[in-house]
Image 1 (cartoon, rainbow, N blue to C red):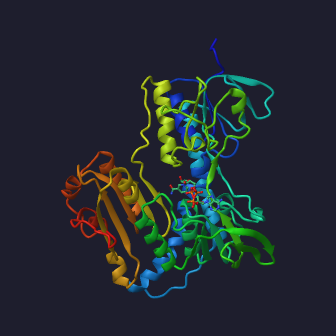
Image 2 (image 1 turned 30 degrees about the vertical axis):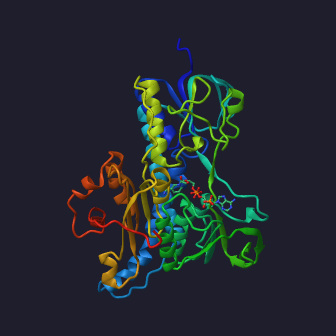
Image 3 (image 1 turned 135 degrees about the vertical axis):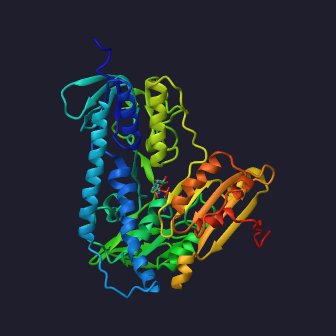
Length: 456
Ligand code: NDP
């Protein structure tokens, strides 16, 4: 008789949970995985993947504009939001289906139910009238959008609803200056929606390099997005045509839709974590060590519920490292250093490593290499959009500390740049790489002159 009903039970079939469950099941372990919504989690169902489809859809308007400069005659283009949403939902269903098939092929037992720990080794599944004994437990429940308690905030939507709006609004006010706010601002503006972003701080994208932040804000404004800084809501009220926003800058703004993108919180509620004795950290996330282990000997947690770096590939690597450690006898801790990320704003951002400000704080002096230019495609059609590329270099060792790009294809470029930075490349090694011509990316390996800002 096996000691437990399941060697491993995973709560949450998102990116991290599914990877861990599959790998563990492929080792021969008896694995169960519960999902209360749809398999695939935030990334596949209401995050990265449908967002990227929306970005693609919204970019056509700027492509149409550029096309004229390349000799195409003006064609009347119109956008059918319901048709796009239908196509998007079909593709998301297909991808979710692949996740289900992969779990089944690996031999994991997928349970469409809510799971709750009754103690560290006992789990209840939905309304089933029995509980299950489990050897190891992995919490991978992700996060949920959070909104501040402002009067009328319930009149706003979050990213969850933005994926299913019955029709495209004529105007939208987006609150926040992070990934989600800026990505949706680009999407809605590209689709022809009058778009305003309000952000409470002095500049958008806190945590990113300051040049990236100002460059992106300026480029977004160039594309017709109104960015209001140092501004918050005092209240929201329903009107005949939508929502009236009363703002701290003393102005009122009426838009058809208000969307809050003010961060996400770890989803820890109602999982029985307290009953099982699992400790949370000061941010309300499950507290884990480098091996994603909680304070309870047989319980681990990966992904956004641990609030380390809230990115899909990080959750996947944490899930894989857990499975390697616990089911293949190869202790593996995912290294959270030098994780690249991209903001799919328009223009998009790619960044890896330290910002100039963080590098100066850490090392005192740093060398900066910087290029701001109009890509050749833009100059050809007479556009004004500019691209930013920036390298932060340690002067003593010549090691690359950070790479920051704003402009077309920045997310694709940063993936490659991240390999060099993760390997610890020096600027001299980077520069010894021959350029690929004609590309925008060649600027990255041809920045010879150190940049000296005016104020230094
Ligand atoms: P972010 O943390 O990126 O941004 C939240 C924004 O909301 C910040 O600008 C923050 O301001 C602001 N904010 C927070 N609280 C308030 C408040 N009470 N009033 C007004 N503004 C407020 O969160 P997101 O929701 O955009 O995304 C969550 C996470 O998901 C990201 O951090 C990222 O890790 C991940 N993600 C990644 C994507 C990608 O890889 N492309 C895409 C989407 C999400 P302040 O800066 O002042 O704190």
